[in-house]
Image (cartoon, rainbow, N blue to C red; front, top):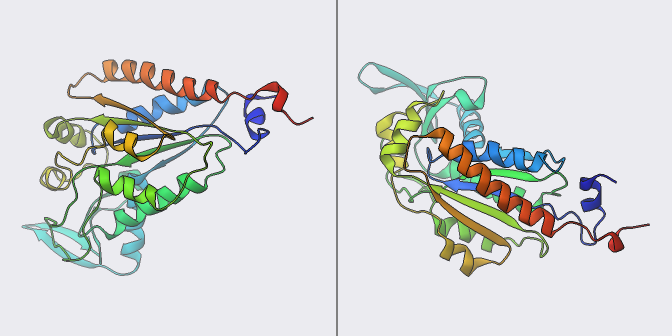
Length: 265
């Protein structure tokens, strides 16, 4: 019997842990996600991957479909402006769109949807999540709507999960990758879909980090690890994340390995 099938036959349903990489934009979460997927695959599992960046990009495209205007957002620079977003460069692939937001409506909704996915997911293959945290934003730098703020700090993360309950047998591994703003601005510029450095620095400034004390007070279902990525050595980061993520996921998976006496039939 395959390992995944053993999980699905356990009392109480599948117990494959959920993985969340969290931290500021540009901290190294995407690299960590690739490491996590490989750790699952070592057990014959192929988890679904969900990132708030891609969901937000899709939400921006949908917002544009409801109507936009061509606006000069800075001298000589045109952009499409919708109710909640500014689109500097469109693309069919969500990860290649260049945009910013005018308020917190779209990203707040994305994070609520992600919370629901985590709580409702049948979790038969595993689930790998990228969740951006940072300080809350009340004042937006470009064409602000004056509406809803962006709530992305540690307390906002915990508040979302206090509104929904996880299965009592489910475990969530959270690895928070933190990095100072100067390193993150530089990494943003190396992305295929970089934000304007000034917008990035204002929206994703330091602060609002998720720390161990937050989750220890919240739920024993969350296993939390924290890592500082304040250097520009991708090989070192990948190597250390491979060790950390592989060790922690293996511990949770092996800890939930089915007892043969509990199998059906």
